[in-house]
Amino acid sequence: MFAAYGDVKRELGRTIPEFINSCNSFSNAKIVFPGVVSIKGEAFKSYEESNLLIEKINNELKNNTVELNRFPLFILCDDSNFVSETLNNFLWVSFTRCNPSHDIHGVDSFVLNKHWGCKGPLIIDARKKPHHAPELIKNAEIEKRVDEIVSKLK
Image 1 (cartoon, rainbow, N blue to C red):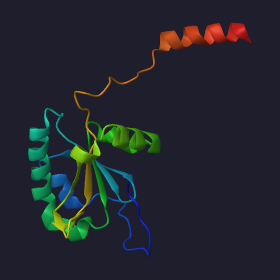
Image 2: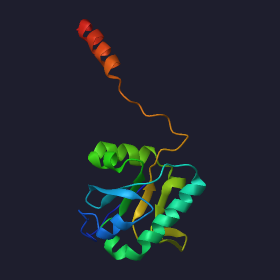
Image 3: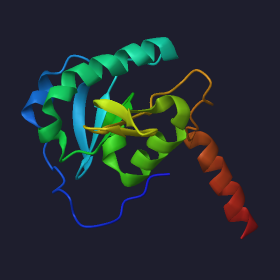
Image 4: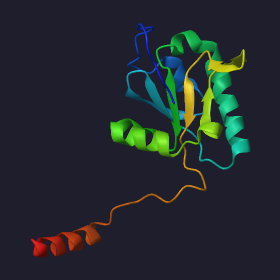
């Protein structure tokens, strides 16, 4: 569960900071909406490789936490264009392809008095995993047949 309450602490970013485009551990950074960035990562292979990728991303971003303060959330995904197209796409990908115990990370993270935190953005790894069900993709031919059947029932 994420909760936020209190006085405004920052103005959320609306344009990608220039240094992000020079990062090598991900590509195609897109603004989803103010303060949220989707980034394309290499395809998920294993959690061991995922941890290495997160470490690379952390190393590239941790020296820019002041500039990144305007972007508290990054979504690591397979298709950053898709994630940034609509709110529904963002919600679907971010929260159905994420196991909180394995897929939530933070830039320059730390533990203080048994509480986890990070100095930079939270990163949700929302890439497709091998255990995920295949995507449900509409078939135009079947949709047409269903529409014909339903129209006869009316």
